[in-house]
Image (cartoon, rainbow, N blue to C red; front, side):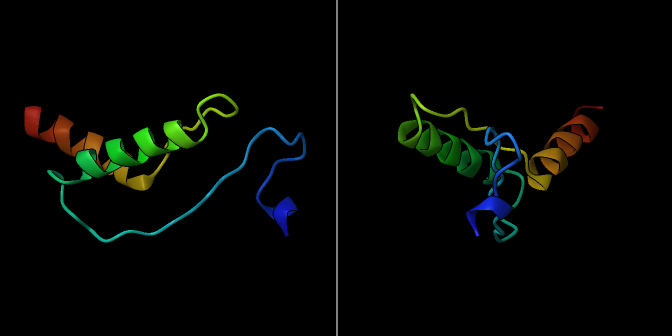
Length: 67
């Protein structure tokens, strides 16, 4: 089962999760907390990068608001 989460070179894995729509003010706080916790857990062995649709939406919203 683990093979379905890891690439062929055993270098990249993807973990997917769902979360409630918390709004654009709360989302950065939550994402920062997730990144901090991931960095604590995997600090020396792995690089953790958050790549979620919510981040893309948040950045687009900031761009529209500033524009």
